[in-house]
Amino acid sequence: MPATQWISSSYSDNQGGQCVEWAPAHASAGSVPVRDSKDTSRTPLSFSPTAWSAFIKGVRTSEV
Image (cartoon, rainbow, N blue to C red; front, side, top):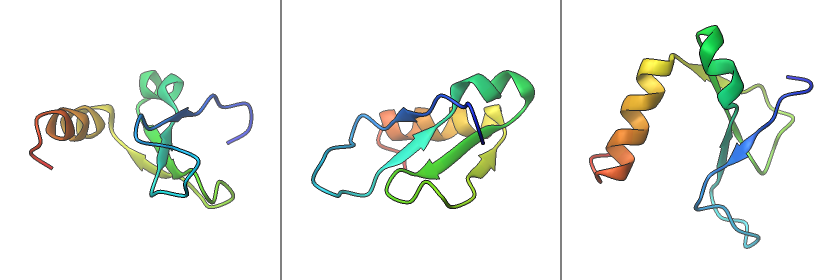
């Protein structure tokens, strides 16, 4: 995904932890790409904005 601004998880650090990045600008186009921040050459997964929002809500409320 060229010219995409990726946002790192707030849990990301330089210690090699399991981290993800997402591209918020794509949500208005109907999909939210999510990728592994340690291997950015892999094809990102794609989620609907509704599914991504539900996931984030679940993480914030410790449901996931």
